[in-house]
Length: 467
Image (cartoon, rainbow, N blue to C red; front, side, top):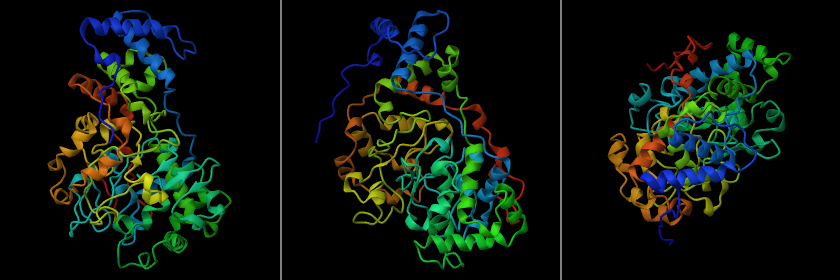
């Protein structure tokens, strides 16, 4: 096993006068580079000016850009998607909606390490199941999904290089259905939670009678449900002019949900975006230091795009995260989760999970594929010597029902953890600055999404509306 080592050089590893000198020398060197996208403002405080220059140059070198917004979504399609996303009619027992685990008032999450899906009561962190059941992985936030090519923690749904969709449905997702999908992978996202017995399908209903894997029959039965409601027929036909509801498939519903996500949860006006567009005054000095550290200690080896997820081919990593919860049926206990390997069948992908986008991360706790960290600080500090932080993981931070399920399989996790994490060593001040930078990824418009929730849905079923 490779031995841990310290980073040999980084401008954040010196202090006092030496730090100032190092930064000034670095800034002078970097200023000689070409292809500047934006120029710093008039000189002011020399330390700040050097920080701005350094951060801009690093961002250019690493091709970090402001978020590219989604293409406009027609109002009728977004309205249909909004209704479907909040309507419990898509679940087997009509007791849970897509947005039950993606509540606008919890920044499109639910505030829980692991969600409680069908059969649960309550909302957000207070949601419980009478049998103590949880779903298998943490609810990912819905921000800027139009920029994400692989969805879910194991990436089992993805937009391929040729524009087609790879998914667990395989031949059940026909070419005719794919032709309906307008926004890439996010347009297909609604096709699969409805098939999960823990999330939405449940037991003892006409949808649950469909054998696992028979997506065609399941989707057909859901469309039959929707077709009994005149308002849904009208909404579908308004969203897809010239097409009769009776000629539509559940791909039309999923595409509408994807359009709703793209139109309602895409954000590009954080302080970091405004800085990248040329406004030097958008970031505090702590945020500038944090941005510099983010781009020099190794964070951008994984967080590489405008939404700060990974570029194609680099999306999945074993970040040495503890495992608890019901798991995916893997390992000796059946409560482990082999992550990406479950989608690819490749043992090299064992315990690799998707690198999530970081936009609005300040708002989306907990963090990790089973919500291992309830605070942003805890999540950042995990990457300070991941070997030791895994072994010292404090399971008391998660809810009591999950604590006994913690697996002590640390040696197996560390055997395949990503070696690029091994050199990272962060001092407390660097952690502070990194957290301040991550807060600069928050678009203020994302802080209050309450207006997204509709007053009612066509089925007349109650809407989950956390306050």
